[in-house]
Image (tube, rainbow, N blue to C red; front, top):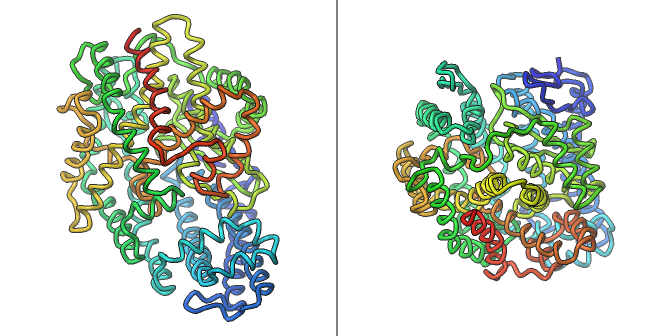
Length: 611
C-alpha cells in the first residue's frame, strides 16, 4: 500500500503521487537513499577536517587559488547533500502531513532530522564561521573558482551572518538539543492539532464527529447556522487541548529567544528580517502603510456586517460567503478555470499547471490525520513540486489552488539551479503564488454574470486580502508581545488567548464583534511553531503587496513583462529583496509603493460597498 488514501480519497479527489521518487517507505530505493544521505554527510564532515576548515581560527591557508579550490569543493558537496536531504524530507513529509497516524513516517522524519542537524551544522556553523574570517580576501578568491563565483551571493551572505554565531561547540549542542526540544514541541503541536475529531450537529440535526480540518472549512459554509456551529465546535476543541498547546508554544518561543540572545541578535525580529533579506526600514515602511489601511478594511467589515444584518462581524462571519452562494465548484471545474486563465498570462504557465494535474502532484481533500491549510514543496531529485490543500468546492478553494500552483511554477523557473542558488527568502517566496492568485481573482470578477455574482467573487477576494493585511498584522503584534513576555516567564493558555484577543482588537477594530473573536488562533496555526522561522507572518503581506505592484507593471507592459518576471523568479535566491525589486524601479523603503498596492485593494472595497 502506498498510503492510506491510495491515489484518490473518498471524494474521488486525487491524492499526491510520489512513486516516481520512491516506491514506498519500506522500499529498497528509499532505504538506499537514506544510506547515501549518511555517506554524503559523513563525506562533508571528512572534507571539513581534511581541509582544516575551522571556524575558531583564521584560515591556515592564504593562497587564494587553494582557498578557491576548498570553497568550490565544499559548495559542490553541500549542494549534493542538500539535494538528497530535501528530496528525502519531501517524500517523508508527504506522509506526515496527510497521515499523522503513520508511525513509520514519524520515525523516518526523526531519523532524517538527526542527520540534517549534522548537515546544517557543517554549512551554517563550521563553514559559515570559517568563511566569515576570510573578510576582504573573498572577492579575490572568487576570481579563481567558477563554482565559488556562481555562489557569490551565498558566500557574501554567509560572511555577514557569521557575526551571529555562538561557538562551534555551543552551536553543535543547540542543534542536537533541538531534536528533543524545540522540534519536539513543533512535532507535538502538529500531532495534537491533526488528530482532533469533534462532534458537531449537521444540517439535518444529526451529531457526527468531524476532523478538525473539516470543521475549519465550515467557516465558509453557506449557512450561518453551520458557520456558527463550526466556530463553537472549534472553540470547544481548542479549549480541550489549550494547556498542551500552550506548553508547545512556550517551548518554541522560549528556545527562539534564548538562542537569538546568545547569538548576539538584537531580538528575534532581527533574525527574521535577515532571513527574509529585508531591512527594518523596509519592514517599517510596509507596516506603516498596512496600519494606515485599517480604516479602509474596517469599512469593508462594516459593510459585510450590514449585509448580514449585524452591526459588526462575529468571528464565524469573517469568512462567510456573500452574493451568489448556491454554487460549489467541482475539482474538475477548478482545474479548468485555472488552466483557462493562466493561459491569458502565459501559455507556458498553463502548460505547467496542466502537467501538475495530470501527474497527480496535488493532494486535494481534507481527511482525518491530514493537517489544515495548504502548502507546496519542492522535490529536488525529480525537479518537481507537490501541493497539499484541503479543497472544499468554494471559490476560495480555487484561489488557494492557484496560489499553490504559483509556488510550484516558481520552483519550475529555478530548474537547473543548485540548492544554494535557489534558497529563497520568505518575502520573495510569495511572489509567484500571489501573482497567480491575482490572475484568477481578476478573471473571476471579469466573468461575473451579475452584480450578485460579482459580489460573491469580490467577497472571496477581500476575505483573502483582509487576512493577509489585517490578520497578518494581528499575528505580528501577537508574536511581538509573546516574545516580550516569554523572556520573563512561561505564559498560560489564558494569557496567550488574551494577547490574541488584544491583537485582533488592535487591527480589526470595530469591524469585529468583540464578544466573538478567535482567541485560539495561536493554537492551530503551524507558523507560530516552526523552529527556524520567528515572525512567519509579515512575509505574506510583503508577497501580496509586492506582487500587486508587479501586476500593475504587467498591466502597463503586457507580454514584454513576462521574460523579466520569469528572470526575477529564477533569481530570488541570488539577491536581497531590495536589489531584486530595483530591477523594476521599485523602492521598498518608501511607504508610497506599499500604499499604491493597498490602494488597488481599496478600489475593490469601494466597488464592494457600492454593489
